Image (cartoon, rainbow, N blue to C red; front, side, top):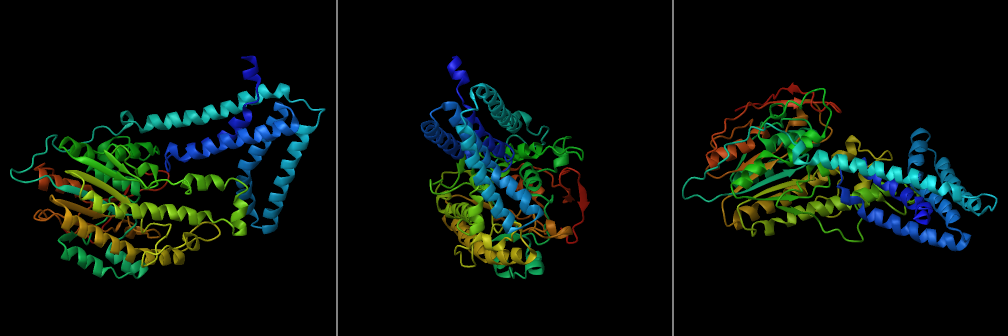
Amino acid sequence: MKKIIHFPWYPFFFALYPILSLLAHNLTQVSESAGLRSLLVAVLGTGSLLLVMRLILHDWQRAAFSVAAWTLLFFTYGHVYDLIYSKWKSPYLIAGLLGTWLLLLAGSVALASWRKLHFETTGLTLNIVSAGLVVYCLSLFLTWSLRKTPAAAVVNIPGPDPTLSVPAGETLPDIYYIMPEDYGRADVLQQQDQIDDRAFMQFLKDNGFYVAECSQSNYVSSELSIGSSLNMDYLQNLDSRFEAANVDQSLIWNALRNNTISADLKKAGYTTVAFATGYEWSELTNADIYISPTLLWSEMTAFETLLLRTTPLRYLENLGVLNLDTLDGERYRQRTLTDFDSFASLVRMPGPKFVYMQIIAPHPPFVFAVNGANTDAAKFINAEKSYTTDTYTQGFRNEVPYINQRLEASIKTLIQKSTRPVVIILQTDTGPWLTYGADQFKILNAYYMPGHTGQLYAGISPVNTFRVILDSYFNANLPLLKDVSYFSPIPHIYDFSVVPNPCSGK
């Protein structure tokens, strides 16, 4: 036991800590499983390197010291790079940084080889320190897991009548909630991006959609807007914890994940279906069926791209050998194509079903040309990894026509090939990026509800979407709420102030 305790395990812990720490601080964007492959590679790589250094230095303690030093240098390179680049932006300093790191790597081996130094007494201390860092990260995972559980979810949600009845002789409809991210209202697209969307709007109307031409979102951010829509009420009414002083985002994430409409439709016999979005907070992984692109070994996850930027491989980006933005864009492309390619199988899936599909397009990164061809997402981003007004507009104009084309084909598939009645909500959570004031709230909001459009009106907002559907198809007798839009700043996302709707016709 003493030999086990005093064996130098710390290189493994030091290799795991940067990965676990980065993962722990991004749990709102990625799932815990996103780091599994990186952790496996880190353990195997550290073990292999430790064996090689043991053969060279003929001592486990010396080998462990050199490997631990290499590991720490490997995972701190990107952080130092960012610090230097943010202040000086000099290519000479960046080249000097890589040279310095190579010297430090060589120095660590020389230090480990120096026979006058003894490392036996430091092994246990470094084991304890490095293991403590790993335990700290694991505690963050545990805390996050507890905050995601239904026990911490929103309470006092005033849902509809617990029993939803369907008129005699009618069949429960399949309900599709399709949300193309950042797709604004037609007048905003015309005004801001000079996109003439009249043909697509006419397509919707010709195919039986009611287009709410004065619609605004109820909140300025995606998580707030979707959480309110799926719970059929304003957040302030759901729980007293939605208050200005509270900055706890897990409150809205739980409200979204454990939402009212999914729960009530499940009680009525529905199967819930959800799709991967790439953003942990918006992924309804608790749906009955959860669809995500197949992860091939040749593909990297968004987390792995972020991790690589903390390592010397970052230098390959500067040389043009590796483009991580391009790799990141390909994942968005794959997820979007998975969404659209799933409609043919969705209509064959036994019903009734409630399908929640948040399509991360035409949201950046921009990966589609007008004809759907692959576009390099990196060309729209400047050296500071940001979008300018011009590059954003260019990318947005590229994607909207292709997204329209795929939406038209998908809608035709649902209407023409479904074997049961269909309800389709085509709705954006917020307006496009780089919009201000009321334009941030102006959204695409269209409903396919044949024979049940009597309660729809030009200014209907997402908070009333499922109230209308449950009343129209299930006799829920839910009153409609007043349509209000609320702005809130970051980080005080629950500090709401009213934004008027200049086109609030009813």
